[in-house]
Length: 344
Image 1: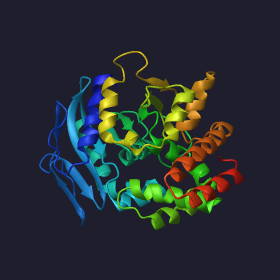
Image 2: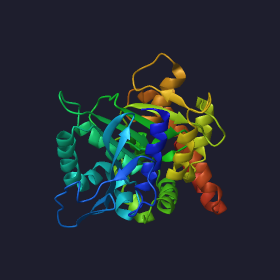
Image 3: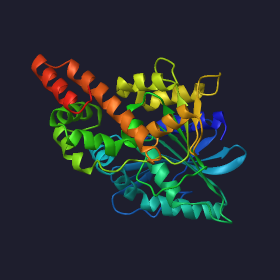
Image 4: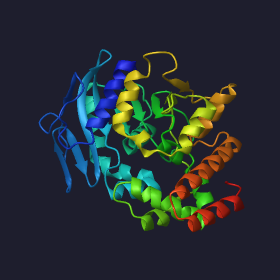
């Protein structure tokens, strides 16, 4: 995909958050029930190009993409408490909402001879990852491609996929929390004080989630989420793309670095000048810094010794940040608990 296409897909992923998208990227047309014959089940709807099933939603369009008429689907990211709980407890659960859409999409691709492009921000990117894992290219089929933005990943079988590219803002905490999900869970289960602090913060950031629901997810944080494909790394708030800079940025755990609007802006500038992006390949590389960055943002467990060090460093920083605004007694408890785990 070209930078222009990727920028358009970022805007489409933002539009997917609306039930009535006001403006699609130039050249994209929303499908409707008249030309995309979805056999809707109970509780499903399809209007203004937006398919809805339970709490899942996706924007279904057609466009000429790099010279090829294509079906382009943008899965919606998290926008309610059900999404939030699925993000924590098992993100793959959300894909069950899209059975009708996926079956119809596959049939339309065959009938029309059009390739499928899937995209999405956050949870939407995770859905695109699962779709691609379920749809390896087959001889004679039109083909499939995915571009994701801020995807936390999903539970996937081992493997890579050169058809996918994942844009990641380097200090976006959601991506790292997905990639390091099992290690973070292990640390939090071993430190109730730290777990309570983190649960409070997560409850404040994820739509509709309570602290109790966040704490209840801890037993389920046992498997890392994985993003197949290369990572296109975008600069931190301080403009950094190196190891020290991205760790320092992530240590701030700023949820504003995950917003779809920021991805739209950053992707538009990604290829405008040297230093505005950095490609982290999915395949092994002799470059030590790229190997570190892969371990940080990809949950495939290829370099567990790097992952462990990264997680302990970041959780330690997050513990300090979370405790800083609390009363001194709680601050002291957190510091003591962190030292017990060599986190602080």
